[in-house]
Amino acid sequence: VQLQASGGGLVLAGGSLRLSCVASGRAFSTYTMGWFRQAPGKEREFVGATMWVGTLVFYADSVKGRFTISSDNAKNARYLQMNSLKPEDTAVYYCAARKRWDQNEIATMKTYEFWGQGTQVTVSS
Image (cartoon, rainbow, N blue to C red; front, side):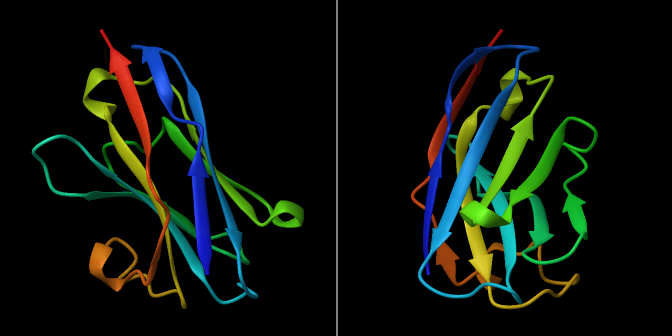
């Protein structure tokens, strides 16, 4: 499985960005797709996750109500729509995939087998 993340950039606080993650390599019907981020000097943290096929979506409390994960199955793509961005959202954002859904594990970085290369999001105040 290969994951290609894109869409990062520089935005003013209060603005919006949409990140994309396109998957290739094999069928993904049982997979979970997650978004993580890593700010300078900090550990990588969970942002949100969704079933590749299905409607379950979970978000970290820090982004709930501002970020939304959506899908385009025809393109094998998952998107992270980020609204009302704050300077503390500044980080490198990664998409990742794991082979199955487990609500107890989806927020744990080490359980993801496949990772994209990361895309930088910078929010200025």
